Length: 227
Length: 356
Image 1 (tube, rainbow over the protein chains, first blue to last red):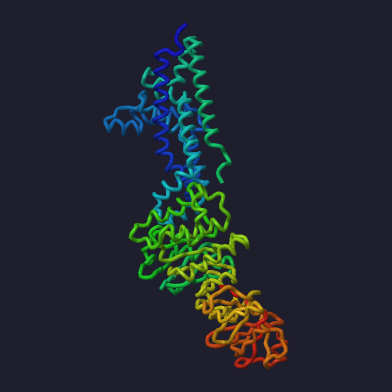
Image 2 (image 1 turned 90 degrees about the vertical axis):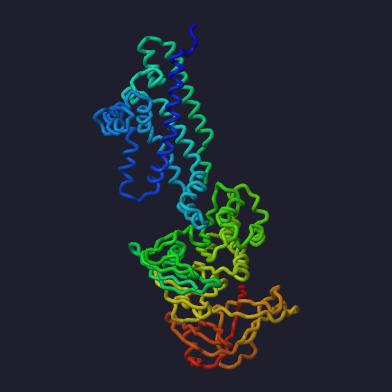
């Protein structure tokens, strides 16, 4: 019998985790200020911005992929910028995949963070201010620790959701071994080639990964513990 | 000296305050809910931004025109109605939160000192504030505020969220604050008994405006203010503990207007005491009463008379030098006794509460 995972499979697994890790880190950095703003603002823009952030939840991934492809292409605004900067064009590159995944997984990071931030009472921030903590100091000494469960949820969901994407990858990244061929695409290839055993191994691996990730989330982050 | 001239308006509410407050002792901001006392306190703290304002504390300008010092740069301590301890920090780290943010050369108090002072020795080792009682939490919150070595301490109804037992537990600590601390305190309250017990200076607020500001007794003795209409209207007398009567278990308090006997208290002779006499507990006699069970009878002179509802009147009397008593009697008694401003009469005090 063949080994469970071929070299191509292992390469796809490695690429998938690299993509998910990079995307999660970027999302935590980008999503935190967006979630903070959404949680605290009284601006009229809260509704529209919140809706735009949530769009990937309801839109078909192919739609997001299509527009990002156009935007990053030679005639698109992002394409102009990347070409002017001498980076070249992003579609069919790992960087392009990262950018697309950031958009695609944004709500899965922003929404748990926003919920966590909203549950922190204004009073905690005021108390910190009366104890001489600046806004930034308060963020690190009060907000971050109190929102820890929200950050855990956001990281797990952002990571897992990026691992599981398919449509956006196909639109933006195509199917280039070692560069853009992630596990979900590899499974698709196996099925197309009637290699059901290989497809089984990878698919089962994904099921186990998703289960473990969610199990970890629910175990480490029991709801209703915080007052 | 603290000078605050602060204007702020919301839909349905406008605060227009202009105040000069003493830089020592406890100033109470007193008024019904919605009178703007908490808003005024929050403006002083910079938690609320008065649209138009001047705020000078000691020699520092905290707000003036375009100048607005953010809260974290104001050397103040703030105690909220609920203790607002940080749930993710141990009791010790809660206490140290503000302390750590003060440069060592500006620290005027040590952690151990404040812990001792507020009786936190047993509580400081708790991993989380979650198990503390309401009174304990509020003591930790007061200690946490004091540890920032504030130049002004702001307290927003620190007792109102507590039950009667916790209130009794915490009041002695507030009194010690009063007698031992040199920091001026601005204390928001809607409970007259708390104010009578703690305050030196009283500011009355109504619908966002200051309607009176002055020494506690001076304001409590005014018949034209809402405080005179309260059920527990009354005056406060500053006296000194003069003698103990072991046989009858009584203590005598002396002041310039005479003596008052109260149930015996364990206080050193010569110590200063504050007694509260409610208007409804004072009756009037035009000649020295004979054969009465009331032992506290003071010679007084009527300073003011004002109707209180259809059947009652409030009287203000001066006793001794600068001390005051209020009395609430029926309108009929006033007419039968022919009471008028300037008359010398006798005030019979049925009950005296030693409050501090």
